[in-house]
Length: 88
Image (tube, rainbow, N blue to C red; front, side):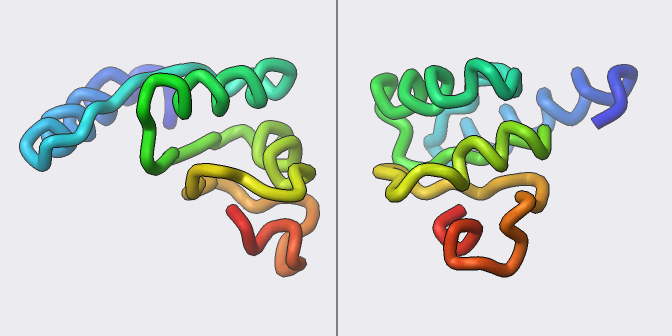
């Protein structure tokens, strides 16, 4: 999402999620921290994770043998079309 549009998009997602009883947290997309961010989301009670957007972050999550909470990645990984990516 281009920086000028990010606040409006995040606000729209937040309003929609709250109307459906869900919580939205922006937790970051730094590839070096994505494992910690994913675990923090789980620790905070996430039942589903939307993101990451950054391809390197998607690649990092795709390296896991198993993800305990489903992920809707917002990009393709380098393993596009493989079993590794199928878990995302």
